[in-house]
Image (cartoon, rainbow, N blue to C red):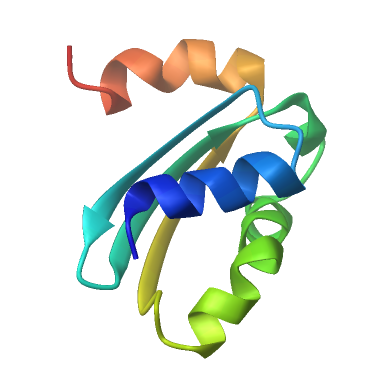
Length: 85
């Protein structure tokens, strides 16, 4: 599975402002930014991202998934620390 496929699934299922997916060989990293995460716990944010990907996880197309989910305000504060220039 390609990172672009994961990005496409997430974009079509969720109202995301930004989504960045990297990785290969079944191991992927997702950074998602959306106002829908406002007020959610970290666990709830991860559950929202996992939900549209359950079929790929069940089929083992996605073996491991690292998720970082931010509101737009959180992303503005953390972006410089996470995204390489």
